Length: 151
Image (tube, rainbow, N blue to C red; front, side, top):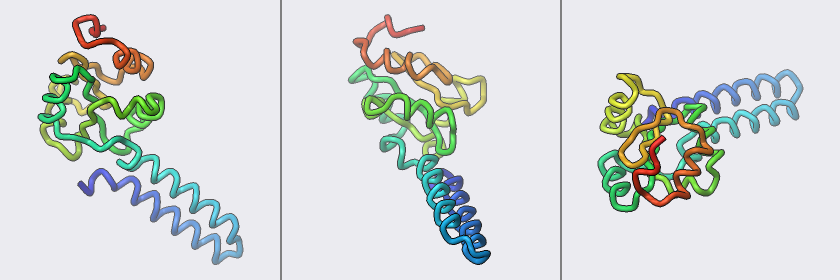
């Protein structure tokens, strides 16, 4: 659980230290602006930006029932953040699994990515796709579940 927050915490602490240094040196406006920028970066790289994750087993069951894709992700991953932002509101239609919070999710990603934990890995109709284009993922949401979803 704490592993997913490490990058955000480092950004907040670093921004705070830099802001305090600037305030002490007589630049409070710059210090405050820097603190705001670091806080925004921390928020973007936190799990708060992503829909609430589920476990890998639960995501597989839900995906089998409703046909929606599963996204395996981790906090701090630039490509996961890109996918999340590009999907916009439709991201909530997917089943999100945090591989740092779910060992079974990490194992599923390693099985799909030749032993690596390469994320985002999107599973559509039981078939994994490592770091797919966000536009392609959006298309998969628009299609009815079935064999036509394979690349």
